[in-house]
Image (cartoon, rainbow, N blue to C red; front, side):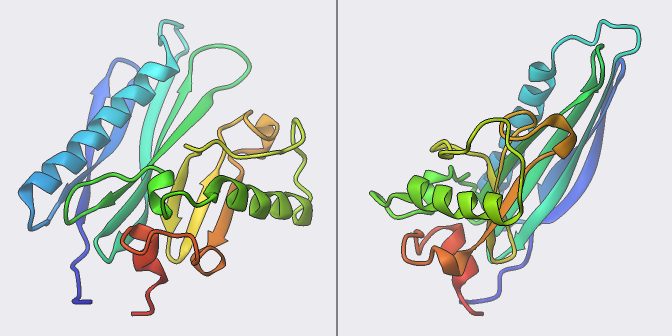
Length: 203
């Protein structure tokens, strides 16, 4: 595989009353259409997070948006977008949405598209997560049975990281529960032409 230059990413500041958002903007790609598609998807997701937080009418309300780059190599860009808002009540709430792209084409990948068609990726990942919950002695709000087919994820180095929203699996104080799964533990079911397939290649 020939060397692929990583995407160039800079932070763009957006503000509106009571809010400051830092949004990633991608450049440096050979494919202009792919760049536009990626940036459009990022902007749309940021807008959805703002909408999901609800009203900032409370006099004490505030909102902050930021991001983290998880992978930027081998034509794979995986990132997490965060939105913290205080809208009244006991404490604020942070929402997280992650996106994984092929920077050559601009395609964004759902969790199911990381795996071979027909593979029982839900059951396989759920079993690995159950084992981590037990091993790490994580206290869950309800007994854990299974991830959703569209469970949020990102890719970090050679791992698939599955995570859950605040209150979805654990108490608020625990924060976001993250479950890293090595690509080598699921190599038999991953889509060899997808982002995880590239991470599994030893080059």
